[in-house]
Length: 200
View (cartoon, rainbow, N blue to C red):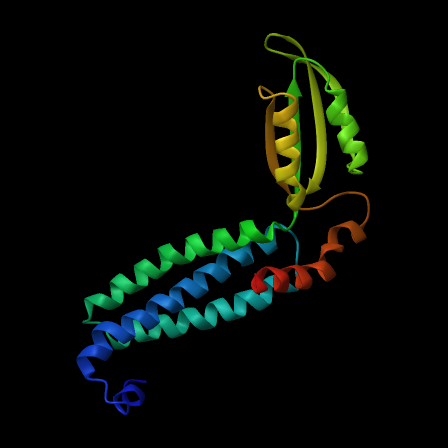
C-alpha cells in the first residue's frame, strides 16, 4: 500500500504519520459501527442480516490490525486505532437510533386510569393490557403495550402530555408470541428503511 501512495509523490513520513493512521481510524470507525448494528440485529432475531455484517466486520478488522502490525513502532497507529473504536461506537449507536428497528415493551404506571391514552392507543391500533395494581402508596393503574420503536417517541410524548408525572419503563423485545410472521414482518421493510435513511 505504501508503494501505491509513493507513486503519487507522497513522502514516507506523510504516509506513516498521516495517511496510514487516518486509514486505520476510518477502518475502525466502520467495523465498530457494523459491530454495533450486528448486535442490534442479533437481539432482534434477524438471522440473515447479522452474519453478513459479521463477515464484513471481521474482514475490516483484520485489515486494520494488519496495518497496525506493519507499523508496530508508529504511535500514531495506536492512537488512530483507539480513536476509531471510540468514534465507531458513537456512529453505530447513532445509526441504530436513526433506524429505530425492532420492538419495545412500554409500561406506564399512574395513580389513576388514563382513558385518553387508551383511546389514543386504539386509534393507533396498538395492542395493550390495562390492569389495576398495588403500589407503595396504594392503588395504581398499569398499562402494558408492545410497539415498533419508530412509534416510541410519539407515544412517550403523548404520555407526558397527558400526565407529566407518569412513570414509565421501556425494554427491548426480541420476539412476540402471535406468530412467526410478526417476528419477520420487518424484513422486507428493513431494506427500504435503510436506503431511505441513507439518502437523507
